[in-house]
Length: 177
Image (cartoon, rainbow, N blue to C red):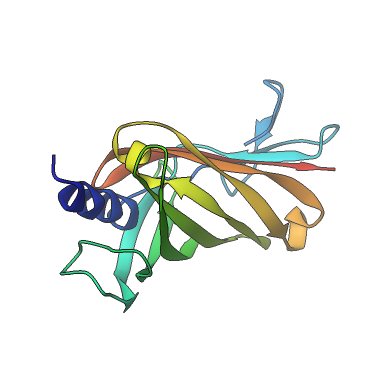
């Protein structure tokens, strides 16, 4: 597949669909009214099986043609998060920077910076992601940078697996340090 087409599909897959998930680290946890599970002894949260619906997507800087990104392009997206029962849980706002082509394999590396607003607090994650392999079905992981409210002082990571242009499976695990 031509590289430019692969880049375009990877970016479209990233910004047009994802599922974010956050829940506890033990099987004995119970779910709260917001759909999260918490284990008091472990001070952990994990939300699972959320659906993410795109509200807006676009470019701040677009040197490429259409949705075909090139190095230096900067995109954004805003999504609503829904629990499996359809109840709205929160929002995701993100900036995507097409950063570089990794020399060893010519993969497109992007910097992803997300703010996830949940009941009782906000979580930000940020880091470099191999967007080429994410398009090929490889799970990506992004470290949590900050958390506020009931999540303050917690650390963890968000992982996601792009399934299609409109769907990804992901998780966000948070535990107190």
